[in-house]
Length: 151
Image 1 (cartoon, rainbow, N blue to C red):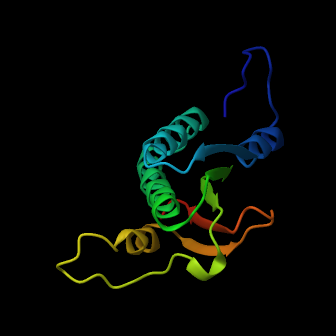
Image 2 (image 1 turned 180 degrees about the vertical axis):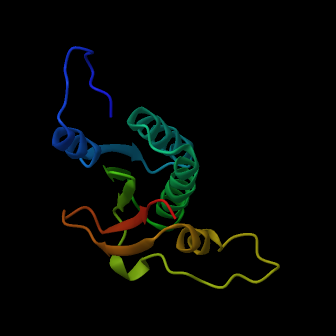
């Protein structure tokens, strides 16, 4: 990572530390179908600003689209929040909704005739890991997360 000012020289340990620094961003949007595109745009902007590889950025946008869509369609959430954590080339995406753990998203086998039901299969194929956990705030029912990195 290049220093922000040309007259500042970073030692090799400082350069390594900056390359492995954890960057975090978050945002919250209303649980409306229009928020899916807004979430995708925000993720794209954050990752572009961080210099995240473009190919992985496209994968991150697909994941955020799936997670936000599921939260909008399958929960009674009023708000949905997203947290991005970048460490080196590893990205963790967390989407928190107000759903309950008993209605947590699950992989399913969609038949050839079905239009929907393959989103989490895509997430599973593209992410290094993904899962669902209980939220830590009373109004937040669960967190759906995925970790992406270079393959």
